[in-house]
Length: 190
Image (cartoon, rainbow, N blue to C red; front, side, top):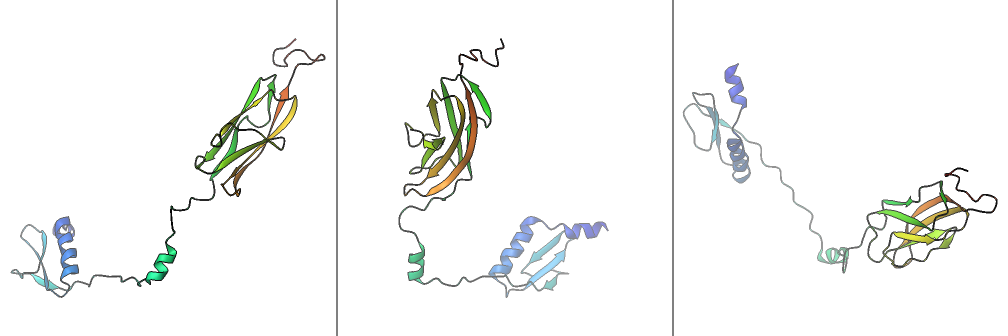
């Protein structure tokens, strides 16, 4: 039993040498023997007590040649095209169904994955009307002095040609403002 365990443990260098030898000289004779300590050896030189073994031939692959005209037509000219779609396109601020009491402004943040690419433009809409962005690469826009009531935000990313790449569904938020009938904040109490 102990001898069998030693036969199974082949040193990695010997196994690598065997594989290399089989690929280079598949027609060469290979011999295998076990020494007095139970270590298995492989060689192309016969040793006393060695047995000749037959190794399988190495598996090879020859690719089909591609005609030169087809290869040049398949290769794109210029820089590689970017992936058209964004994996994530979501409005993260304000949180949907949030009520804000008398804010001076509302910060709108759109999260994109991957980040907004060069040439792509984010357009944020408040109640269907585009908001003016100070930077075409901005993913954050401030809405100054929003009116009282319910508002719906949506966002669209378009490439340079105007093609829509992704959109964020409508996020509704509510603005509460003091009035003569309700001058106090609902959160502050009366």
